[in-house]
Image (cartoon, rainbow, N blue to C red; front, side):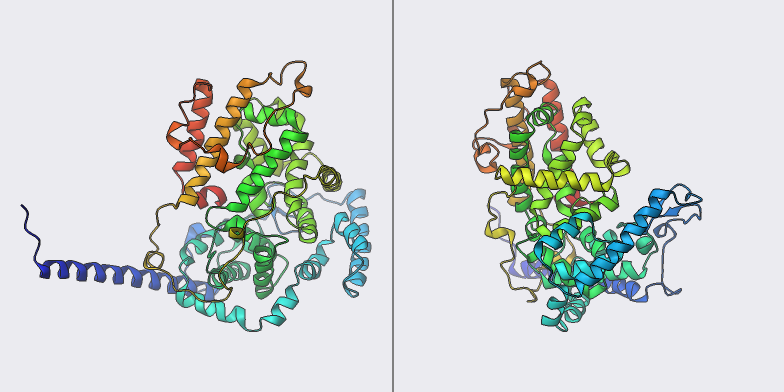
Length: 498
């Protein structure tokens, strides 16, 4: 029988553990203080910038009107179409100035002009009006400054925010130089918001959203615009960024439901090649198509999103697939399909912005006619339950920067993907191949709630995903590839990382 250790030994161990914890907390606090000091110095020549942090700048890069650089020379002269577009935009400027001076305008007029595209010079005042930024600032005087000061003393996400700031929009002049004005503003906004919305804290997708806002707004304006996008039920981005990503799950399920009803051939093609919507739609949903389609088009989508809310996201996802369905059907493997949707469309969308937005408007009308434009209602976990602006002291693990184990809700994301892929594989085996002459008329007999995660997981576990007798060896290999990809990366970094 083993004798119990002396009481004084236990006391000494506890004392050592406390000292170690104190040292870790102190190190994290010192690191946070050092990072904040660098951003406060900004472009001061005395600031420390590692050589790798600033990309080289070559004069032969061209820069578009949004500040993004491209590896080709500017044309020596503007063509007639460019001249005409400039004239049209100048005329729209005048109309928008007049409309903004008499805000709010009739909804029909506003709708028509937003869908035509907000002139770039008018985005600052127009987005501020659409997001009620000035009203938020007037109702919360001094709050942003207080949140930023509290972040300097208590923020636990500073190291991750610092890393993400230096990755965001590195091909844009505003963010290219380390500790530039916009980098500093982005750093401040994200740290302050992690304190203001303590329930959410910080998630990587927020850096891209705030980065877009800061291209058109000042620092405090962007903070309150970000808060509107996150907390207002019209946009509801809190549910996208919060642990477990409940809104992502809800939107993915509804996206699948739409495809199974109005784009059956493409839906079956995706199922055959194990292309789960989670693999291509994450960046679409989390950052409203920024970095996945040409930036000029993503701004047009943002204009409409700010006007009409989150139903635009689902409609744009369907529009992209509809416009490119023929090319997608020619691709015969998962990697090729994902690369096309995530990489190639950004470089060459294949349609000009006006044609793409007109297609979006038609899709939105069709979805509304079919009563598919709005997904099932959100649950309470998609919105903040804790009062905003109320400081909540972080636990010891957060203070030390130690990565916690995944929660059940985060692990659920992995299980959801595997479950949907298993269901897809079974459906593919039980239906006629879309490659037959009757491909366009085959209807999937899928229950309305077949994509419900809770019901599809009944009796299913992660360990069993590779053992289904209905799946081929190739199917299993693809499942394992997806599972390994998800298991070998932190959930938030996988879903939202650049």
